[in-house]
Image (cartoon, rainbow over all chains, first blue to last red; front, side, top):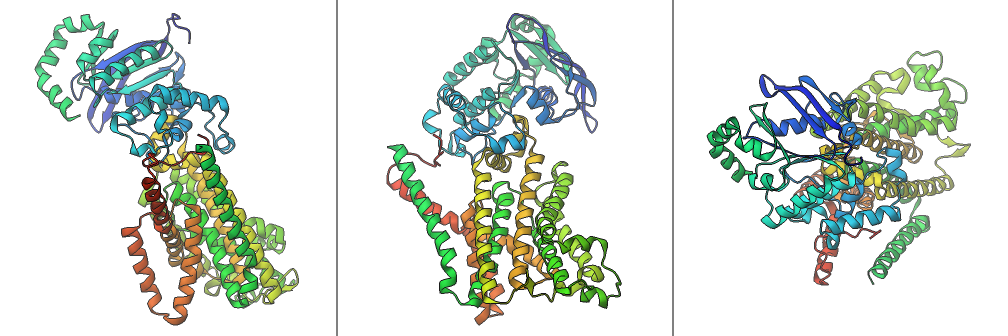
Length: 261
Length: 362
């Protein structure tokens, strides 16, 4: 996991997803390096979320292959197996466990042996308690550790979910619009956090908030109608004519999409 | 200060448990033999309710097929008792149905140890197999519930149809002795009552351990969001299978005790109506709390026996009404009502914890 050892952690080759005739993703190639913070953008319906679904196993590609860590083929693996290998997913809407307490949410998300027997025998060790408490402090919920997670505000739920994901210690984090519904201040904080995480882990972020992308992206992948349109630095992408066309032509749609998101 | 508050709460809890256990153990001093026998039966039902709460209240999977698991336990015990009573000869109903030799699968039931183990393991295994084919294929919600109903119909039909092996509609009855002691004698009844109390306490302890463990937290997480659990890296199907299987094993245990108290098991005791009734105990007592489920079974059955003694026809209507009231006004059952009072009190005490639940380790 050392930084600087540039190697591919995730590779998607010719991924096509066919939903009963509708090709949400068509022959998409995607490569992610270790310790990279990658932004995946594109107009509505470009297939960004479907791409994340393919990587985390929620959707199986019709054609194509997904390789994790350069050698493990995860194309046909089940969701929980992929998660165990080290790919974490945060969905667009905060999905936490509402009847568990904030602490319990973090406790079960924490990296651990997830077999039934292990769960039966599991005791909260002091070291685990410390890690959870440190996480609680980082996401600013230490005062609400014993609250039912369902009683948190929208923003707090987002943070709890991010905290759960960090304790899960995945090698790749897949985030779908993590700053949706956050204030400018919170957005800034989230960006800083993502940057810090990318020191040790790799991240793919699907985002509509261009301001946010501009501030934090080093490399951007643009998708359009299920295909790769352009990949490169933010400057390169902004200079690209086709990207401009897709975005200008669809600007209104994208804005409409954002305001309803 | 917080810590001390917690331990005081825990002290009260312990005192409550001790009082309940003492009351249960001393009940023979106060109750007539008839009432004691009834109570023993209800305590057996409470064991079913605990198991059902585990799978429904905590894991969010509604089974309307627990009558089958209960019945299988009952049949296992009844087979042993019947073989004991027949004393080496062919059980009477087999004789009437024209069998000349004991079927192979009846033979091992002449051992009490085997019958006892089978009474728990058979239902648990059946649940495991059913769970394997459903949970792994992500069949859930109402579809799973319908499947459990199908299981009931298939099993009941099978048991009625195979009269030579199962006693048909009449079930298995006509035995009166366990280890040479008459099941009808007050001494045996008292002993069996205590055995049931111990079984109930053990079942409660087991369920409490399960629910408080990290396993139990994962179960609740599955109830809240099965998919999310998957993306954390747990395989929910395995957890559901294990919970369902334990739940079925408890129902089997209860079925065995039931047979010892009542002296008969028949397909009508494992049918659709009793299966639904079991769910009602948990719904009315309060699902998601073990004590609520157990109390629900005991109180509802007590009410049933009191009411049906005086108004045999009105009972069903009363129970239906009770169910509607609870579903509409008290989704968490009677135990939920209690929790609401507690919550209000805490609110008034300005504890500032909001909708909080205490986490014992914090």
